[in-house]
Amino acid sequence: MLLESVAADGFRNLDGKFSCGNGLNIICGNNGHGKTNWLEAIHLLSTTKSFRTARLSEAIRFDATTAIVRGEVRQSGQIVRTIQVILEGNTKTLTVNGKKETVQNYMGQLYAFVFNSDELEIVRGSPDSRRRFLDDGIVSIFPPFVQTLSDFNKVIRQKNKLLQNARKDETPANKVEALLAPWNEQLVSLASRIHKARVRFVERLNEVLERKLFDREELSIRYVSSLEGKGDLDDYESLIAERLSLRTQAEIYSGYSLIGPHRDDLEINFDGREMRKFGSSGQQRSALLSLLLAGVSVFHEQQDEYPLFLIDDIDAELDYRRIGKLLEYLDGKTQTFVTTSKESFVEKFGVDARVIRVAEGLPTGES
Amino acid sequence: MLEYSEPVARLIDEFKRLPGIGQKSAQRLAFHVLRLPEERVEDFVEALRQVKEKIVFCSSCNNLTDVDPCQYCSSPSRDRSMICVVEEPYNLVAIEKTRSYKGLYHILHGSLSPIRGIGPDELMLSNLFPRLSTDEEDGEEVKEIIIATNPTTEGEATANYIARLVKPLGIRVTRIAMGMPVGSDLEFVDEVTMDKALSNRHEI
Image (cartoon, rainbow over all chains, first blue to last red):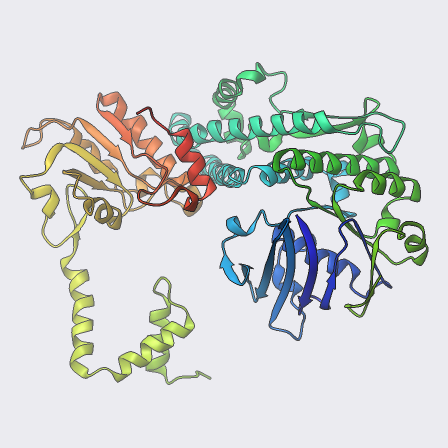
């Protein structure tokens, strides 16, 4: 997949169109002129989501009623498709070659991995960011997993409500157990699918993870189930069923579902120490890059195509040594888009790149 | 200040309470009513009143009916050894359209959802169990319960809850299959359904 050009109208402060290079694309301009907005537009085209906001209506320019982002995507050889995301109020319309498509049919035209300061939460934030990293990665190669996740979350919400009601109404234990059983039964099967998918995904990441690409210390990752040490994880289904029945009282007492993959984590270590606690901010950035690159490799293994790689504010987030290694690694693989406000960056890395200069949201020149 | 005179505003408000009707549709409907001849409006009002007056729940299966017991429960040609459990009366209609199911029904009028405050007591479930004992007047034994609740987490929970209560009575409990729509091309099936259809495959 190759994004040949991208156009925007009414999306934040953007207006106009630019064509993209096959390799490195540098979006360059002063702060506040819309570099990141272009990156966000490309991300929107690739994933139908923003990396900045869950409320896409915020991305419509204040004096416009609709925002349009359009891209021309070369699938392979001669096939070029025009894909478009139209935002109007709270509705999002997706089209491929001018025809309206469902999210499921739209997805898969393009896919992007993104590196920015928010994504750093994966290495230094709470476990839910790391679970989301794994789940997004699994969905990128196995879309039906979306349904498993959504069903699991629904079951957990229903079960939490049931537990809270039971605590409030002081429902007798045997009655609570009868009410919990149908939800726990679904939880067991959905949790097992999630556990299996995540364990397998981490295995695949581990197979391709570049452990020392950026730093001397060796990077390692491991999926940590919250049921670790409680029994045989290879027979997860029986284990979680057993834990659920053992812990019913504790669940009623706390009013929350205590057992399941929503309590799991991805452990990220360097030389055996925990990255989240002991890593320097540079080491944490290296770790995130390595994880994303592993995600890119798994995606490529599965789809036989490379996704896009987006890096916001590249020289603020990474030093020139790391940037050099990263760009060298990505060269010949992904189509890469980076933003920078520094001319010195363009001089150093822009030799074989396409440089897009942005002022007031408009692309003013390409070279 | 109201944009419309009070009777019109009130009618628009009433239409807006209906499912699937927003401000614009409500206005259109209200103005349509204003243009109707008097007697059409009377007919409409009468139809609304009658549906509330005459329609009751079937005392046996909870179907909506104007005669109790309903046409399915009272029909001598239905197979009394099977009861199909559905969430809503329109689910019954969908199954009836197949013309291949000849058993009886039981309508729950909902599915388990703690979030929406719906527990087993809020469903019309308790009157299923007297139907399962053989000493009913017609004397025929119920041999199978087919659970046809929706393939959602709520529908699954409901199915599971009922199965746990019915199975100990020695009655066969089955769940309708989920998967491919018949007559459509494989390429038009979404991935989630396809995935489900693959995992529920059977030998031929």
